[in-house]
Image 1: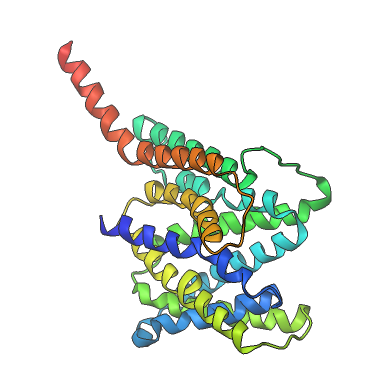
Image 2 (image 1 turned 180 degrees about the horizontal axis):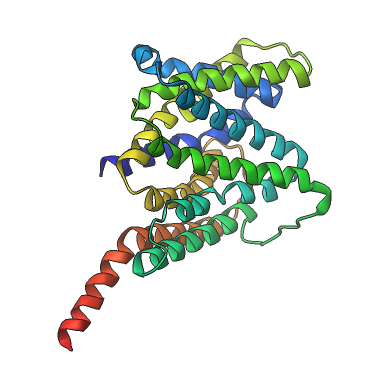
Length: 291
């Protein structure tokens, strides 16, 4: 239960990301990412001793957070955001595929069915139910970057289990390292930009929430629960993100019937992945007893 609560908290924070970013439209993406990730490290500063981890653990965490965030930012620049976002939201499905240890039987089938249902809901949410997605070879680089980001995030989510044990508070060090890499990339590739006090306020909000505490919560969830099941919960992010944008009056033309349909599919997908295997096993055992 704790793992699911932490995962839900992380997803709620990620859902606010688009809304918070919309209040700082003048900041270049890499600058915004670098400052926000650096600010995110402050959420773990009170446990700075936990940042002392083996080099390969640090390199893994810093590298994954940098590649994911920078890759996604560049994908949004080099491809239409709808298509890039859809590709990015393949990460829960990739996580399910990578996290499923048994490839045969009821459990695997239920997880895949749940992931596909939730992904269908994600498609409906992002395209507003129109299905208007037009992939073009002109944006192949952007699509590739979005797919890379999705794969890296899935690997990062599972990777903490493969590394020597470390505190979840060590993600503060990962954030700081990734933030510094993003700032260096900004200096190399983006124009210099003046930062206002209002912009810094939004940067802090982004860093302390979607790019800070959320990573700690997600790490706890991934290591404390069933990663393949919890990963499907990630498909709730686009729906919740739209709700946040609407509450903040950042979008006004949303068809809420499609959002409702998307929510039903996502909830159904999560429920099937989480409870389906147990229910099917129980049904199978009952049928065998009747024989």
